[in-house]
Image (tube, rainbow, N blue to C red; front, side):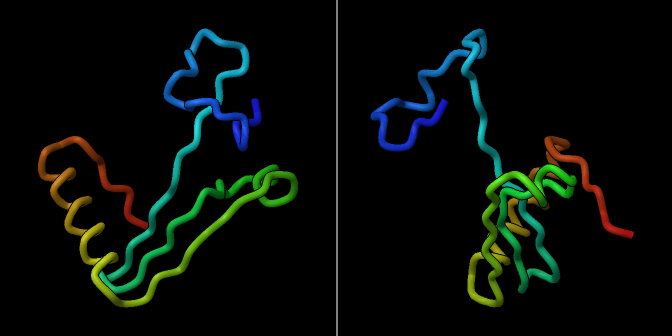
Length: 85
């Protein structure tokens, strides 16, 4: 279902609807100073067929704010960290 310009409210789409879609974002934060916000999955399909978007942020308040938010969610056990090794 393409909702762009349709006037459809994404929140009104039911999971039982055959046309159900979701949109989610990925965040990567490094050192509370660098942040990547994007939609891409690291799969062949995402890299070759999907339209993906990403924004790189260096400095400013946003990387620190998101890192602080993630750390709060980790302390509350609402998020499990998956550190890159």
